[in-house]
Length: 141
Image (cartoon, rainbow, N blue to C red; front, side, top):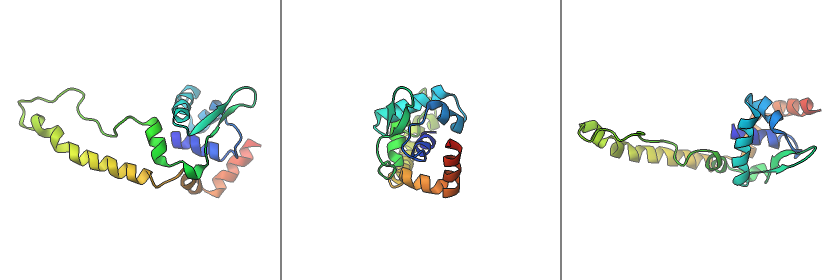
């Protein structure tokens, strides 16, 4: 959803976008959007303008926002989590499962973060396509 929000902001030509407008695009509650926008704001990815005609805009150019920045802004500290309660220390599997899984999960997370580190918001906007962007611009008028 965060990438959706940022892509929508980029396609709005620098004009502020309200949380209601974003919520309609994402098809969720404006409160959900405001919580995500707050996280994006804390990460320095967006800024908000208050008052009439206000809304949210990108804080920096789309080609300077990497998906890794978005991931770090809105996701939990780690992609994979272990058991919420400790597995049985007397079970041969329970005793060793976390240590066995840890290196694999760590490598998978590093691979994901590496890929997200090379993809920019501008890449996503280009992937959305010119037709979709022109339809969006027409809908704003």
